[in-house]
Amino acid sequence: MARVAVVSEVPVFPVDAGNRSRILTFTRALRAIGHEVVFLRLGRRPLGEAVRAAHHAEFGPDRVMEHVLTERERLTFRFTRELRDLGRRLLRVFDEDLGHHNGIDELCPRSYVRAVAAAHASRRFEAVVVEYAAMSRVLGVFGPEVLRIIDTHDRFADRHRSYLGEGVGYWYSVSPRTEAATLRRADVVLAIQDEEAAAFRRDVGDGVEIVTVGHLLDLAAPIDRDDGVGAVVVGSNNATNVHSVARFLDTVLPRILGALPDFRLHLVGRICEEVPDRPGVVRHGFVDDLRRAFEVAPIAINPSLLGTGINIKLLEGMAFGVAGVTTRIGARGLPETLRDGLVIVPDDDPAAFAEAVVALAGDPRRRAAAAARSRAAAAAWNEVQVRALGKVMERIGGRGGRSDPVDPPSPRADEAARA
Image (cartoon, rainbow, N blue to C red; front, side, top):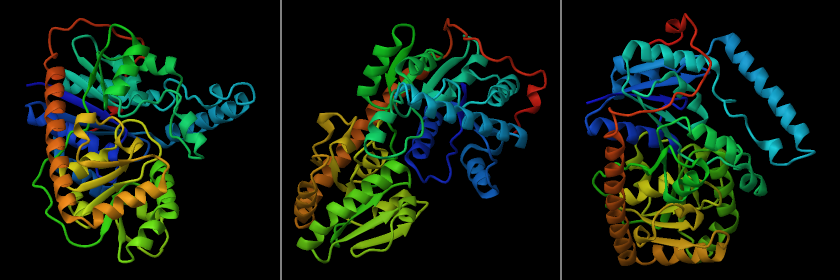
């Protein structure tokens, strides 16, 4: 149908974090509805051979393009960011928010823009999807004949406030005005959940279509696992997960072990790198098959205490038909009608969390019923997201539009991107 460029600084493989899983299932959904996907990876360092091979196997060798900053560009980028960081630290004396806000294009070097221009010149895309608003600068190389889409993943307006309040580092934070400016570069903005879509509509105003396309799920056969006394946490080693799991281990797990001495908490993913050996915890490390991750225990736990977007691992556990216990913030973005299979506890109530896990662990029938309801909810969720994505892609062709000014491509831009 259409040739679609997916532009991302985040690689897909290995699938060791929620954002990578989002990009993988999103690109698979695009291909499932008939589009040709070219994955254009922008990076400060090249992919390793094994990782590059995995991308080639997924998309096809001729549908993966990689642009990497030169050593000089990398050093310039780093030096510029350090100067900005110094300036922000000085600004915090006068304005706390301003002293934490990133610049509109701070994470997107001009070299990325030239690389995307070169890729478009050689492939002539009919639609482009940019992963994260921080990369929206590259959309300026496309005219109104190309459908320009930003897949937001998260909302980053004043993100630092909640994170620093919990003593957790944040990756990126911008003012609401800056975020709105990045989003106005697109024809369509994809929010990962309805609350963020409403916030984007309020901030961006007219002229840009805001659509909720949540995380798309792989609805393989459900997991049939109902033996053992334990639960699993699947997660990467990002600061949010490390903070939440540490709090769970210190405040909730001892209560569970007091009631169920044989209980084991299984950790799967890069989060294991941040957790030392301790009683009641089994670390499995990274596994390259998500199904194997959720097969290790009959209950999935989501102890999130921070975050925006939607909790992808929560949805993936539901898709596999695993009973789940989560904090309220962990269930963010999931409609009330699809929460029936989950046990949702207050965000900072260790006693309630422990009681919920103990009750579920001791009642196989209840676990099975919750797992079945979660699986059904995941299927209903996925149907809505696939339909929404299909409607967005129907906009290809017949659009008017605007083209925001950006740095012009270099005359030698064709050398900046390579297949």
